[in-house]
Length: 275
Ligand code: GH3
Ligand code: MG
Ligand code: MG
Image 1 (cartoon, rainbow, N blue to C red):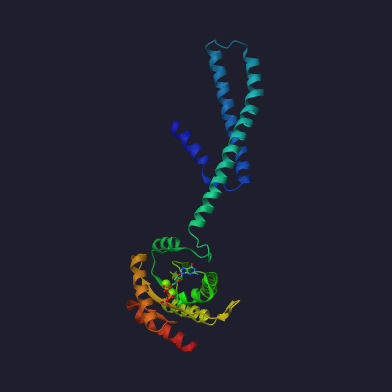
Image 2 (spheres, helix red, strand yellow):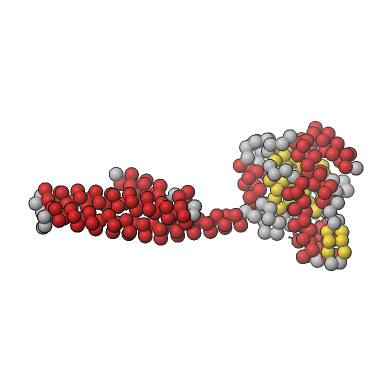
């Protein structure tokens, strides 16, 4: 019985039932009704027991009238009030917890997922997937020439371009200063590579407007394939090696990591088509 009551209370306190004030209010009436029926039932049983043992100090008739008139409204009002107070507090806590959780997983400058969120999502996805690591080329020069604030605008613009070009099923994140990562789990690698190259070209063709004049930036990227059991660290290091090769190879290009080089066709086609 104790366990059942406990389970019932826990069920009432599930966040799912505290989504909005309206849900809490509606639920409070239902809970109030149940508590009221329970209290009234217990009250009647207690009166009959006292009556049975001849311990009732007044007549059973008047006792039942008083119990019927007082118990249901009092228990209803008390339980609804208590439920509303606790329910609203749980709702508010749930909302601020969700906001905090969202903030802790979002990069403030770009609105993309941050490294932690990306890593979590990547490792949670147990399917074959493709990963891209992008880095803005010679970004230090942008900061040195135009200032840090313009540098920030460039980072935000590159993020915007990534989101514009890549299809919605890709997860994009800013995983470092001027470094981005993308993964996709339900797209052939060749198609993913072609989209990534489209993003690279779009970045290179986008003018950054500043009070000191306009300029373009380029990005370099490394692409890797991930088997379902491979975790972020393993895949990232291969994509990062490919990124390094893209940098040393002249920048403004994508390079496939070694295990993915068999799929080079699509990327080469994409680059040739763009040339
Ligand atoms: P590479 O082509 O080899 O990537 O050269 P790079 O200049 O882009 O790379 P480097 O690592 O030398 O410089 C990266 C710069 O990015 C240095 C750092 O001050 C700047 N940076 C990192 N995070 C931010 C940021 O949030 N905002 C701005 N404006 N700059 C940042
Ligand atoms: Mg860079
Ligand atoms: Mg970098």
